[in-house]
Length: 154
Image 1: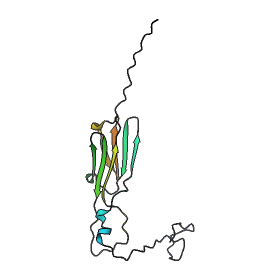
Image 2 (image 1 turned 60 degrees about the vertical axis):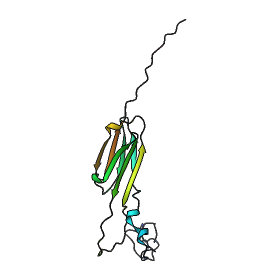
Image 3 (image 1 turned 135 degrees about the horizontal axis):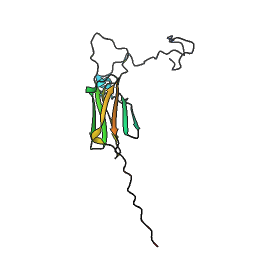
């Protein structure tokens, strides 16, 4: 019943043990209307995205475990917004199955990022490997202003 792990080895499961890692669910036996517990309504909000800027590009990395590249869309909107979206479908239920815990998210997700003006929108590349989507947006070279020296007379 405690969130404090046992420092004395092993996993403890005694209900009366204050250091037990078992968590009691007071709503386990309640019957809720299906509209409250529908997995289709749950948001896939845990999509974590890292954005780093290197001298050559902007690199986005999104953790999308269990998704195939066909289930993910990468789009450029209005020539300035990178949009990453997709959907994880609900696992099919068998009436003979008894679920003890459902923690994995399902549903649609979408993340949007406004890109700076130096991004080359026509050269964006995306790759998916081991559940990590990597989107690379190359940067245009920054033009240095032409400086023309003026001769001072007098």
